[in-house]
Length: 322
Ligand SMILES: C[S@@+](CC[C@H](N)C(=O)[O-])C[C@H]1O[C@@H](n2cnc3c(N)ncnc32)[C@H](O)[C@@H]1O
Image 1: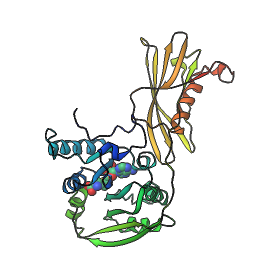
Image 2: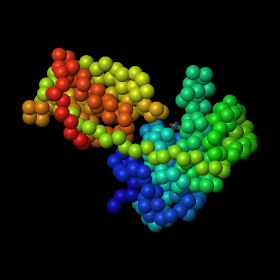
Image 3: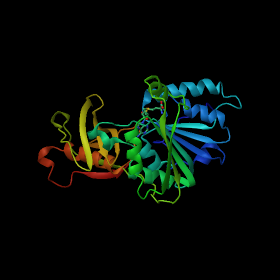
């Protein structure tokens, strides 16, 4: 079997049982936003007795990291880089759903996006909520290391620590991680960076997020020419992007963006003729996590795919489970 370090998190049973995945019980370290994978790969190679999970949401950087892992792993000979796995996912969703509480030894994040503009502060990753989530997944005595060139971001993270169960310690360090962004800031004149180490001193419980069951719907009628989708804005926002229709297959594909809590996902919903009825369901082959927002988006397509005159009439909509 060909070894692949990529975990297809949307296709497998969640949470991931990392000792089963790595086939051993070893200290587990996680790197958020590994970029080109330099630190992740170097750490895994230097510490064969520890297991490493890298999280990155940028596909191009993930791809370049996979190339480096493949180069280092050769043809899969013994001793190759077997203690590293990568996830292409938002770190918030990863820690919510893929890591069992109290199982991670250390989390690293080098040069997280500082979002310096005032209106963008809400995008910063290390919020009070996220720090509580990290705490819940760390073992007692575990910790988080964050390195940043941005003094305001470091100070902002320290202000997020209330009731997170972490004790902070910070210091200035010279370049020592040799990552793309460390080199970039160093070349631009930064001689030192802020290294913030958060040690877990008390446990904060944040339960694992469960999958939401996704329903199939049935319609008696569907006219793709008359289909209009009204965006929904609120705690769950569902934004229409486009609809494609194949008249040969009698199949429509509706592309939506679903934003909820701190997660944004792209979703394709299929509306496809099956005999006398039209089936509305999540299209196959997507890396989508089944959340309440995704369930609502499929339901909205069903509601809005019904002919306007039938929208308020009950009875032409059946439900089945996917
Ligand atoms: C400034 S770059 C730093 C990359 C690398 N650590 C380095 O030092 O060169 C920040 C990285 O974090 C990733 N990232 C940002 N937010 C993320 C999130 N919520 N989940 C996973 N990765 C994230 C970005 O895609 C980007 O690759």
